[in-house]
Amino acid sequence: MEFDYNNPVVVAAMIAFGFIVAAFLMCFWRLVKGPTLPDRVVALDLLAIYTLALCAAYTLLTGNPVYLDVALVLALTAFLSTVALALYLERRMDK
Amino acid sequence: MILDWLICLLLVSGSFFIFISGLGIMRLPDVFTRMHAGTKASSFGSGQIMIAVALYFLEPWIVIKCVLVVIFIFATAPVGAHMLGRACYFLRIPMWQGTVVDELKGKYDLKGHTLKSQDE
Image 1 (cartoon, rainbow over the protein chains, first blue to last red):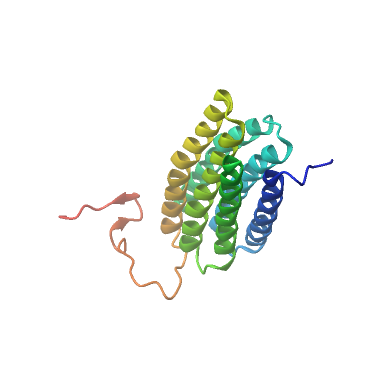
Image 2: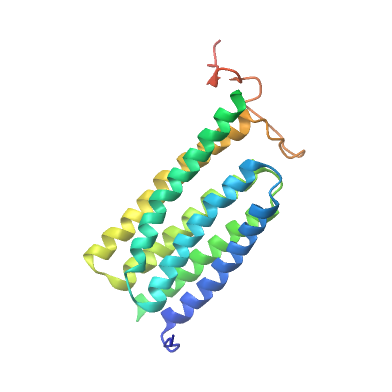
C-alpha cells in the first residue's frame, strides 16, 4: 500500500506505530514469562488496549474510519474478559 | 495546518505514553506495580490517540464513536484493575520486598471476602 509521506499525520502515525509495537512486544514478553497467572491476565488486558490504539493509528494512516468500529468493539469486550478472569481467580481460591 | 500539527502532537505523545506503559509492565517488580503502570498510562495514551482521530475527521458520527471509546476505556479500566487487584490480594501474590506499607494487612477477612470496618 502506498502512503503519502508528505502528509505530517501519516508520518506521525508511523512513529506511533513504532511506539505501540514496541509496547506490544514488551507486554507479550510479560505474557509469556509472567511468573503468576494474574501477571498474564494483566498483560492480556493491556494487549487489548494496545490493539485498540493500533486500530486508531491505522485509521489515521489510511484515512478510512471503518477501523474505528473495531476499536469500539475491543473497548467493550476487553473489559468483559478481564472481569471474567478476575472472578475466576477469586473463585478458584475458595476451593 | 495548526490542527494537523496538533493531531501529530497528540498521536505521538499518546503512543509515547503507551510505550511507557509497556516499559512499566516489563520492568516493574510485582503484580500490583505492573497493574498501576499498565492501567493508567495506557488509558491516558489511548485517550489522546482517540482525541487525535476525532480532530482528524471532525464528523459528528466519528466524534461520537471516539467519545464512546474514551468513555468505555475510562469507565472500565479502573473497575477491571480493581477486581484484578482484589483477586491478587486474596491469592496472596507476594509483594515486592521494598514495599513500604500494606494498609490492608489484617483487615480483609480472607474466608468471607469482606473488609472489616474501622471501628470494629
